[in-house]
Image 1: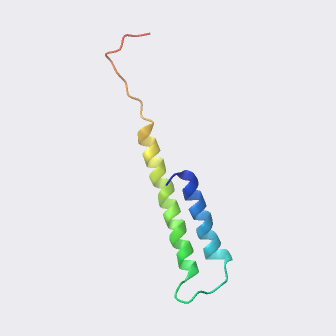
Image 2: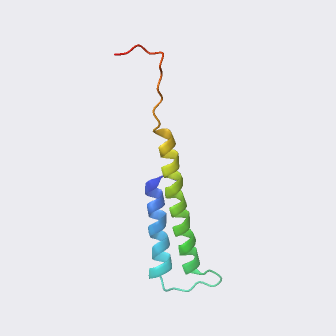
Image 3: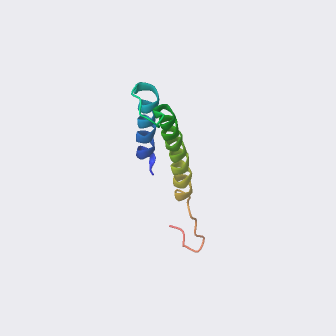
Length: 66
């Protein structure tokens, strides 16, 4: 899951938690919304960690100077 997908998951969770007033038998939409928001926040953290590892500069000393 990338950054955009995480933002979409947070938005979907916020809609379910705060804006939807319907009731489904056996399903608490507020809890589902909070779970979606937590998963989106975790996705943002994980995508930032993965991207920070990807952007490390590898220095090779065996190349001649330019």
